[in-house]
Amino acid sequence: MNKNPFKSKQYATTEIYRAKPQDMERPEDERPNVPQGIMTKCPNCGKVIYTKLLLKNFKRCDECSYNFKVLANERFAMILDEGEWLEFDKHLTTKDPLSFPGYSDKLVKTQTVTGLVDGLVTGTGKIGGLPVMLGVMDAAFFMGSMGTAIGEKLARLFERATKENLPVIVFTASGGARMQEGIFSLMQMAKVSAAVAKHCEAGLLYITVLTDPTTGGVTASFAMLGDIILAEPGALIGFAGPRVIEQTIGQKLPEGFQRAEFLLEHGFVDQIVPRDQLGRTLGTILRLHSGVDKEI
Amino acid sequence: MDLTPWEKVKLARMPLRPTGLDYIERIFTDFLELHGDRYFGEDRAIVGGIAFLGDLPITIIAQQKGRNTKENITRNFSMPHPEGYRKALRLMKQAEKFHRPIICFIDTPGAFCGLGAEERGQGEAIASNLAQMMLLKTPIISIVISEGGSGGALALGVADKVYMLEHAVYAILSPEGFASILYKDSSKAEQASCDMKLTAQDLLAFGIIDGIIAEPQGGAHNDFQTMAQNVKTVIDADLQEMLKVPMDILLEARYQKYRKI
Image (cartoon, rainbow over all chains, first blue to last red; front, top):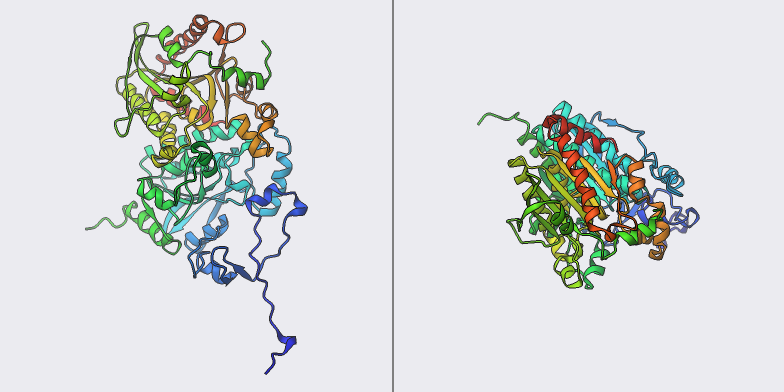
């Protein structure tokens, strides 16, 4: 029997449009103008997935386990107990310290497209009933590059956590330093590391979760300072970018170089945690440090 | 002497410019070089040790450029590996134990970006230095003598006082790298050097450094002795002050120095 041609179902088979980092470099009229889709296609294996199901599955492909990029607010929802969480410093934005040509325009555009004020969301909530301070970087905003806004938000997060005796969890995702803020971006590495150091001195717990990609000045500062460092499977984590290293050594890089698994083997990551186990793992770590279950 | 930012970049990179050891030889006495990080190896891109400044024992850490091509290769053009930063930290913690002030001479195009550097945790080495220098219970002075190349420089640059020589440069990236990323054209390095604001004068105006150390007419390479004397004068004056300040006050001021940026 012929299918009724008027009843044929057409699914939108394009990826959810998120302003990808490289889109930021393209003039606005060249960027794809694709609306939010009901379906999402896995860029790794090609499987088409219901977007809502994808979100329920921690934005991981159920076919090949490819980790889709997680937006900051999605990560907050995935990790924190349901219920209220409080966002800090929601409107904190950079002052463009170098008055860099074209930067403020690009900032406004990016803020409009992403709905973010800068590449980091901070706040507080609970995991397994235990209060925690949380910072999540979002690579959709200038590739998660760190400038004065991210530096300031992180310093404030750690200072608050020190004052309130709370642990901090930071999800890192960054292409490195915000070039347009020059030397100010460099100094954020020292500023944030200092706030981390004070939090550490107070005997408080700091967990980093390294996500794909985590590079440059972020790797060389707060990302590698966690008491416990977790990483997502396959995440690219390193100091120098792969292309720069290839140019320096004049050779192709070894298979798996700078991936989470490589870092684990070389002694720099405590555990690689798949997305569906992340909440549980973080909960366990918090309990181990909370002094709540003290009876033997 | 009015140089453009690009002229300063070129001057800072000049092979004839005084290096860390040139200052050590002229400012301090009885320099005892100490090698190795105790975990992996000896990184010759960084020279570290103890010496007398007058009759005051000091720990000195210097990024060291080669004074000829052969030496440059041994010193990896003063681009440290993780073991270089770990050696520096080991010596700085030792300085804390023995209540010795620390003087760091910064001069590097950047931390080395090779396979071994990544394998041994270049990011972790730098991060560790940043956090631990902030807490060290001893006065620290850092001086950018030529090139301050990004995180590789900052890893020796968390201090109570940070100075730059008059024609030194200190930046998030090289102008070539910067131009390549933002202008998609590394040959626009000269323009980048202006937009980036990387001169000593820029950084002083921003409040990021504490002072500029004057160079002899035409640049430090023209008169090593005078240049070293200018540096010594600053170090002497600062240490005299800082050694009188209670440590908790010094540490809080160090924290605020970076907190306000």
